[in-house]
Length: 339
Image (tube, rainbow, N blue to C red):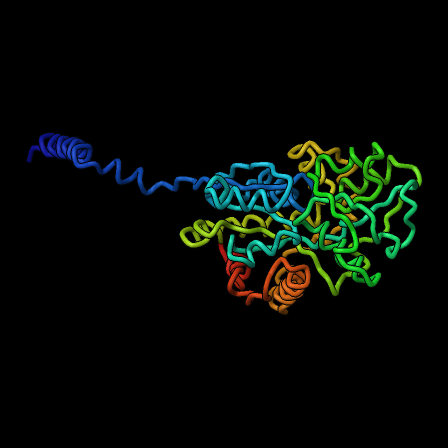
């Protein structure tokens, strides 16, 4: 028996098989089986609510572990983000509760919340002469309209027996609001942290006239993550993996808030001390508490209450069913993923 010849034949056969594989595209098939990260464009805001979970997920590698390549895009308001999603340039966006009427109108799909805001409010300067909510009647109030600032203004006026028609709302961007207040051009403003902290720290005699804390928990304003309708329809698996990564970040953040502040500062350019001040003005739940909010029905109740507020503000004609504009159980499904 010619063992060498047999061995040589086997070697040649292996070589021939390799050549055959090259000719038939087998290596290409093997390459196709490799996981290629899916690219997602995510809109965020420069505050703890709108950026901290993203910053942690990015730094801790949770998106990478979920097979996602996340591109971040900074925005100032929810309505602008919803416009970007409608145009197809953004897939996922963080919005404040003040813009939730847009998903309720069918412009996007809500799939996740990761915080409850307590940092919205109304600030008056010493020169405004305003000391009570009732004294807001007939005054001009600077605010980014269509945001949580407008909701807080509405709730504060209602508490004083007034409505939005009793004040003159002056629309502005969040980036222009604090400079206008500090210059004296606008002695009354409604907004959120860190802008509120900036004006309270730099304007002697100014005071916080109203805030979320006056109305919580009856009125709860969650930080909302939305997906474009097209992305939500065609990429449920990727959306679930994104939510899984965010849940990991929520858990990490709950035990490492100082680190989360540092990473958020790096990502947004907002000084860490300002972000640290705003931490106390939000509720950042752990994953277990977040899941309780969902399973207890609290989340759907919050949005139904918001819907009623939007109807009263004439932003909606009627309160839509929660399931019509939100994924009611995607967070629960994401929590069970093993990645």
